[in-house]
Length: 202
Image 1 (cartoon, rainbow, N blue to C red):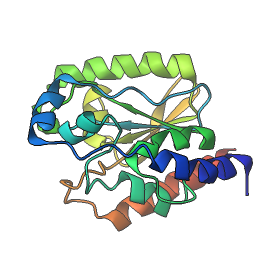
Image 2: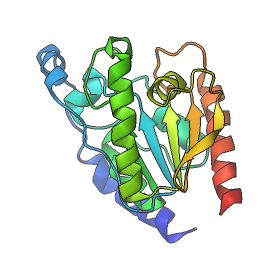
Image 3: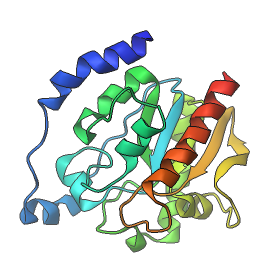
Image 4: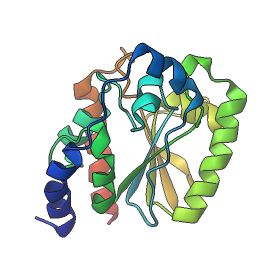
């Protein structure tokens, strides 16, 4: 067991104590004015990039926070985490070498509310974030967001031909429960492919 994994397990019990209360309807309505801070550090192994915060996620202030979002179970199922983390335990990812950001910072009820221009601007912001923190891989959790932001309308799932400096790019489906095109088992399998590639790449 690695030092990073031990740290993640030790921190789990303490992190669980910080579980936020379930947001009320008023909290969800007010969340449209909130953003969720990036979870980043220098030289991460994988920087996961979501599309944008939803109302529930912004209301509790933690990435992929809505019940039914499949990010956290898929991450554990693929072997990235030693157990299934809760959204409010997200900082336990950093000792393992993983972080989270979003393509677009603006909170919406649905990603369909975002404009193409917002995706392009988000891609530019992401380039700056990557240049500063130098992750080994950026994994986009929403292939449509990647296609729009980087002008790659025919991009397929998996490793991309382009990179950002020395940072590889990988496209994955959105883990949202609203994404009926991919089941949890699909997400787990695709994330396992990413994990295997990262391990091979050293």
